[in-house]
Image (cartoon, rainbow, N blue to C red; front, top):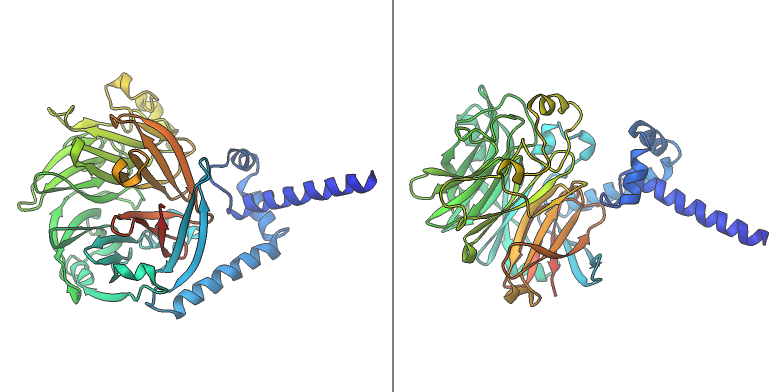
Length: 455
């Protein structure tokens, strides 16, 4: 009997030890409600102290393991070597997905620098499928490409493409804050670029004719709008649209009154004519739009955006219904999230953060996430491609996941949900390679390109 009690005690101790280590190390599933509850009652300063004392040995082992991976990445240069293969099991349907990871030669995201660090702003990387090649750009503006067929090999064999981004910054006497997206259309590569100059912070779009020797970017669209302080709410996503136009999302940049002001670009999604660079307002009342997808057959824009503390949204903008004027999605008046510490006064003063969007005449999100998942890019695939109905694939930073959402036949509601969780990862960008029937994923921490089979 005593032996049984001792074994039970040891088992409970081991489970508690592992659970507590997950919390203090930050390696837990950010959507696990039990751990999230425990984290609420463990003060951050205490968690850090415990990690650096009681868990000093496992912490050092984790650091050494991570540093060894970084050394391996550095030494392999631009090979884009395959370094990880594993099976990912979906959370609800228990479906198996094959994942392969290849090194990206770009700087890794370091969350210990904090979100106020502009250094991390230059460590957000993106990719784009261009014919038989795949292009990628770092947050610092370095461009590479590799042959798409190489995802079936042991290395990607990445090639560097020169560009004139540094010349652009020098000409404008500006400091690069970070690239915010990479988009290809009609033999041109587009980038959104955030910089700081004497007027403050701003974001613009540049375009270059496709060339594997050197990309010469030229100003395509200038917002001419500035904000005074660095923040992570710049938006910047670019996406295909109708009538020879592209879509461009812009965050609210901590300027609370701008998203409801139609004369400001902040907190908006706009369309830009590729020939004239003239713009039109498509929707407003956005906080930080991170994902964009235009569904031509339904004339509908699907976007994702970060909420405040909770309340990340998926929004449907059916342009057949909203013909007369731009659609209003409510920020900062309505949100299913809560203010961050320090924001309470401005919301109380204005009577903002009404949960319901509809009560104020705004468009309700099709889905919101609370706790927040750090929502990022979104992909729509039709029933023809999935063989199991129309689906949305939603990537996330904080939750390190891809959410698989089933849509009804009218594409109005989400009727089912599954989740792929990638431990200790953040997903910045997501593309679908229809020829190979795989998703291409940009993971931030290593960083790497993930190739995820959907079969």
